[in-house]
Length: 432
Ligand SMILES: Cc1ncc(COP(=O)(O)O)c(C=O)c1O
View (cartoon, protein in one colour):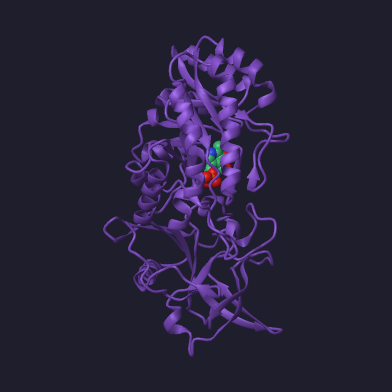
């Protein structure tokens, strides 16, 4: 469990920091091995998983979307915290099994799956192949037939409506993802007739990064209504139901954190009614950032400082190349600063005054910005900056090869508080 935040370690961009001085010392220790570095606190991930389970009172299982963070040490640790994984490529499946996961506990979602990936997934014994179209189901059926298997599949359905409040939406408009709800009855009947597949349930994922409890609940109600309507087309026996969670995290100081108990309280009667009908097994929430985002930080060191035309600019050793999302170029329409703080800032800020500073990275492009006008104690060369909410969509979404700066290191804090290197090496054996 994470240690309680005793007193603030400094300011986060002008507001109180939720980290304790011990946490700040942990960040400094992780950075001592070299920056830029991502640090993931496994104690906090475990606490978040436990809090999620408790909030829903055992009504749902948890599946972690590997795309959010495929770090092998994290994936291994998650084995004891969540019920399953969802992968979206043959490469992610290879990462997950290399980290010790049994393929039978893994689902494989994702558009444009290629035949070799499907073949590799079936050969590994994937639990559920999530088919996103009739064409993909036919391809999977042919492969299963060749291999002499009957593969369990879930059909991914794209609802015709996504409530307002999601950062990105994958349905409710023309979309490459899943089977459009309007065509689902006809398509599912054809999938169910394929001889080498067993249509064992339904998968929904239509929006990410939602901080509004009522929108999350409304979205799940849309899923549940569709699931009830389509269940008669699926196989006999309790069906699997994956609810893409869409739970958001407060990246920015102006964000109000999602009220998880409001979500859980509101949806509980719907989940209880569904359970009483007996047609579906316990639904599974599929999610990534909510579990790991707030448990990770990106640490970058200031290489130089320039006062330019009235603004102070701190040039950091990792920027957009190492953390695309924080630079505002991944899922953000208007750039807003991530929560961030100056490590050791409480002691290092001279007379404690805070002042605006722009944080930029090492790339030769003006879009390489980490923060604009962040309110911090004085930032000098050598200062260490911690960007919060960085445990998801970090290194793997970033253009790490652009201008050939060092690829960010990754490290974890173990249950015992130890900091361990956890470097992620791209798989060279991804199915082609
Ligand atoms: C199919 C699917 N599942 C799960 C996720 C994870 O979303 P999040 O990290 O917002 O929980 C995504 C994100 O795009 C997704 O597309």
